[in-house]
Image 1 (spheres, rainbow, N blue to C red):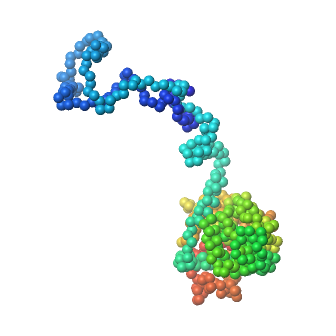
Image 2: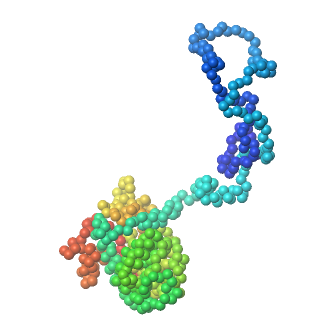
Image 3: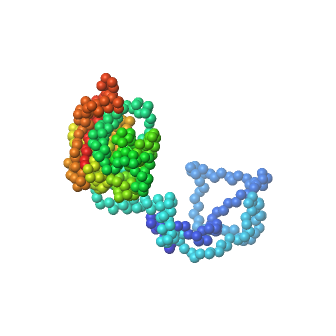
Length: 483
């Protein structure tokens, strides 16, 4: 339908339209009698007309002719006789066709802006990567933004956090033993590793030794997806297993089966290689990349790894990853459900989590007039976005640790809320200690004391590579254990 004269098309018309296939737009345009048309002509120096006489200057009053009052007359047009008597023009370089322009219309006269049919619109929308897809998605985002009634935009921002965390850990390179020793925070890394060894030895080993899942296991459907032997005792679920840094610890625990889950697929590949490099293999293992804070393990693990085809887990380990679940109550409950649903009665949850009280105390110590809510030292930096808004879930801060963590979002874990929530899933704390207390209580232990030197936390003289900044960074964690 043609638009009224002088009225521009609406934005909808310009987007939801397509060019007409009318024959009236496919051929050359007819030349109007008033249209000036030029053609290339060749002239020689003999018959080239002389140059025109220059016009008199307009700014010179003397050159103006005297004004003569005369009636207005229309310009005279040349007669047909005069036109016939004129000589023929010189031939053009490109001869003009003698066929007269007479297009034949094959479609009815119509506007070039034809509305799309529903079928065409659907195809336009579903064309992956096409301009229509981009336009429609952009318009949808605009509509969604306009329809947003809630002033609190925290949930929409949180959807990007999982991607940031996974991207960060996927980008972390795998370094060898030599390069690891050259890390500027090698003292802190060795200390954290020692704390995990103490926790696993003290609280996981006894449960694994008493496991009903002991002895060799035949090649039955219950071993679907498992690789390696199964001759030890006990079954471990490692949520947030990362690159498999604790594989050797579980070798020393003489376990029979191991399942590792992590959100970072690159880390899972490295953990799988670390297990396959064991010579000889010590236990059977299954690794998979999944977000166990939004997915049930029954949806991501093969049936042969979980009950009823397979035994329950004796130990669930969650090292330096539990706090990511406290982005929301739903994620925290999914995490605890994945623990309690597959942990046998009498089993243990061994984990580490940032000390929420310590974090908030440090936040309170930031001067009131500070431009940024930041604290830390040369080793770590923590940045909060708000001082007074402290929700139970989604209390986000940004954490940086030299040579380890590159400014990723984390969440405060309010301990009293964690205890009450875990109780709903049959999990009760039996041990809660800060890392400093774990050290002071075990540095003279008959087994864990010598382990300090063996794991290079201290040298032969008892001196540590940890400076005061690294010691302060270690103080932000404590270790809750539940059963």
